[in-house]
Image 1 (cartoon, helix red, strand yellow):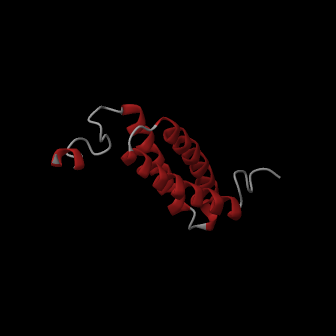
Image 2 (tube, rainbow, N blue to C red):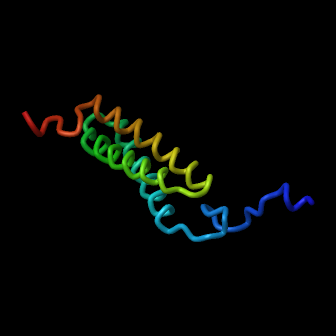
Image 3 (cartoon, rainbow, N blue to C red):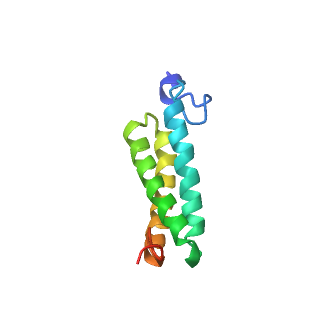
Length: 104
């Protein structure tokens, strides 16, 4: 009876159902990397092009990853990446935007 109360989490880091999810894991990794780049570059005013574009792409990949994710671990990582991407995107937009200084 105790087995029904404790799930087996000894499998993969991201797949709690012991099935491979290569597309979801790739989207998770891409979203986390883009979120980290966007968040870090948003702290520098002159890097607003990098932070806004990586943030936008990170938001899009994270949203699609959430749409097709199958496990809670994938969703948790995607939410972290989405949050970092969104912060970086909004700060990049505040510092000059997607095309700030290039057009005009």
